[in-house]
Amino acid sequence: MSGIPADVDASAAPPMTIPLRHFVVALAYLVAGVGVGVAGGRAGHLAQVHLLLAGWVCLTIMGALTQFVPVWCGTDLHSHRLAATQLPLAAVGFAGLATGFLTATPALLPVGGAFALAGVWMLCYNVGRTLLDAAPDVTAVHFGWALVFFAMVTAAGFVLAMDRAVGVLPLLGIGRHGLLLAHGTLAVFGAVLTTVAGALAQLAPMFTQADTGKVAAAAQRAETALYPLGVLALAGGRLVGSPALARLGAVLVAAGLGVVAALLARQLVGARVEWSPMLTRYGVAALSLCLWVGLTVPAWWADPLGYTGLLGQPATVLLVGAVGFVVLGTLYHVVPFVVWVHRYSDRLGFEDVPMVDDLYDHRIAAGDGLGLSIAYVLLVSTQWRGMPEGTALVAGAAAFLGAVLFAGNLVAVLVEHGPQSLPALLTGRARAPAEDP
Image (cartoon, rainbow, N blue to C red; front, side):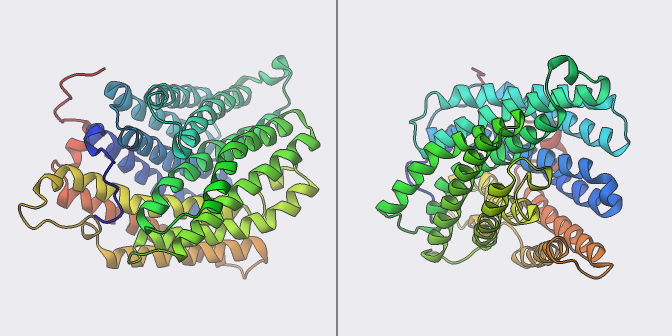
């Protein structure tokens, strides 16, 4: 259990079933999203984006915030009931959006959007109330901004969904192109990457045990202050069609993510622990983010308002290499850790118990890492330089195999080591807390 600081109060965490249920449902979205990408190709692009970014990444973030904000803050979650309710609302909403895009049924989009908005706003209120009791450190500030961005992106998404169904944007005087760009900006750079930056500020030093120097700490404080303002400027500039405002935001966003990448790389190089699947995937993310910043800055400076440059150049490096591998690595610790705390922590010192990294199969972890890395390299090569016909199919097959192995490895942790069956976990047949604030 090296790397877990003594002042982390695991007893402040919500019941185990709440975050783990988020993670299991998110894994199902991962497999579904990769599968839709393989089977549907470009026709399923919007459905795949919502299955992976909203379903897999955002549901994972929702579970992680629900689990670790109380732990890091040393205070009880504001409401267990709201935390349990947010998942079915958001999951149904994201599924409705993906189904609407996949079947070309615009009428489904506002329905799915309403459910998604309700679930995400429930998270924002619940975790936001919990954060009010936290010290305003780097992680807490990032998470607070992330909640603001989550609320904004779901509101923008709901308006876009209504426009696809009944055409409301002309009545509101908002251009669809600008709102679409702002929605994507707030989703990826706001909700997702602000959360990632805040989590890495806590997790990277914790699990590498590397020293953080004064210069690194100062750079991190600057990123904490300026990066969220950059996201607002970039999204706002794209919304109103202002190249100057968007260019300012682009510089701040790229600089902030460059700091995150550099600090993560520095901590990985100075790691004092054995490398694990978590740190290996963090290494891929750090290299990808450094590459993305170098390629994106000139592209954004030249055209910060173009749709093709919405997520920088190339977008696959950011979405798969940075975001995807960070989430993959984090889940390889978070899921076993939550299970370990509830199943084995009270036995430590009284009997032999496995460590967190002993709960999953390292051979399968190596296999899924290889499959997903091959898919990543092939996708980037195809997008960047063009590859022979059939490369995309090979990449899709490797990605699907890797996703299935990854999801199966973590589900096996729950089946073998979880204190209750998987159906009981998913249906919530667990003892409820005595009091719900």
